[in-house]
Amino acid sequence: MPSPAGTREESLSRALETALQSLEDSKAENIVSIDIQGKSPLADYMIVASGRSHRHVAAVAEHLIRALKDAGLGNARVEGLSGADWVLIDAGDIIVHVFRPEVREFYNIEKMWQTPDLEEETLH
Image (tube, rainbow, N blue to C red; front, side, top):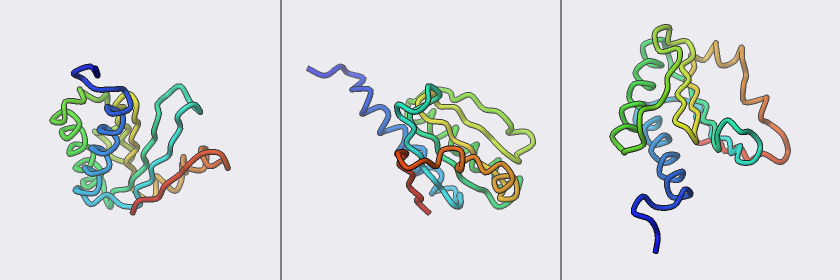
């Protein structure tokens, strides 16, 4: 009999779905989900997205933080919200980076994870 909280896979799937839906709802751009399961102890998934401006990056991040909490996924740790050039949201199994486009291009963190054995999915 499964536990009331569900399996870890179900929880991960729900968190990933919640995060991606929140980003879509907030009109985040160039959303990329990278499966890093077994590749990094940091998380199982990394999501990278862009906002059009400081204000949009902050709004996208705040909406995501609220969506994760409302879904019962806890309080995510957040860095960079005050400057809103690059906001990092650590939701445990999922790490989300929301950038202004110029900052995303400069750091190009997706490239660090682009190896033939990593699955990367561009969503929008």
